[in-house]
Amino acid sequence: MPNDFSGLSRKELKQILDDAQEQITAIRAELDRRQQDKQHKAIDRLRLPENRTGVQWHQVKGFFQNLLEEVKRRDD
Image (cartoon, rainbow, N blue to C red):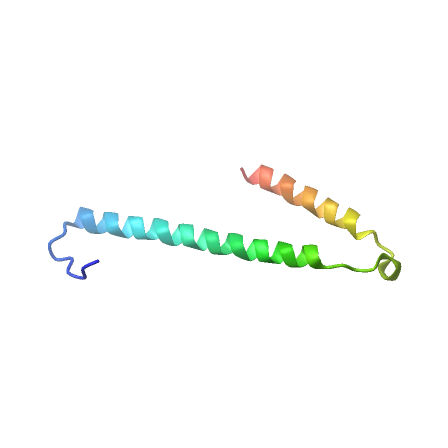
């Protein structure tokens, strides 16, 4: 991409900025999605012995999954 923008109109320059901002927004969303996936995988790998915790973690996990799904539905 050339760095000489002198031949471009204000409208063309604004369009370039708008397109770049859309790309930045999409890239940030993808980075956030990947970070969440990484965190979810780390949580899924966690195994806590039930006899030491007194809690059935699969039920807790199910509760939070349901809660997240409900929050996502509300955001849509």
